[in-house]
Image (cartoon, rainbow, N blue to C red; front, side, top):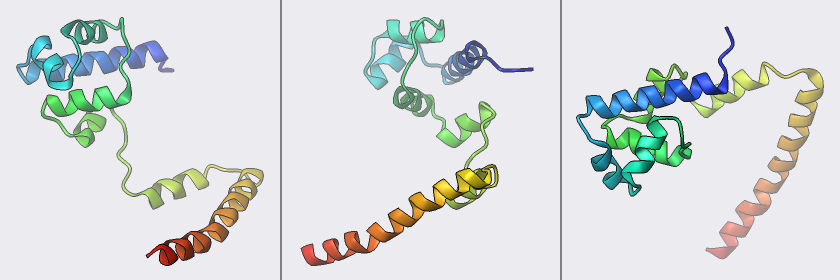
Length: 123
């Protein structure tokens, strides 16, 4: 079954509401903690307002959860390390895409020594 954006939004707002309720916080209390109105919290929980990611992170912390716990609740796999994450992405690329990534990385690697030298000279 495909998950639509509407279904994802519903599950996000449902999870956030349950987190708030389990923390025994009112909408007014949470709103005061993160610097928005209680109306914004209500509209978010009723899917009438989307909140940016940084506000969602503030809410998660206000409810007493970590982002790792939140991601686990939402069914998102935690990233163990950037290197492992990159390996997983690279494995999905075809040859043409790999060539493009290699070209970008080569260019970045040539710039690193120049940046390092500039930093050393500035000290």
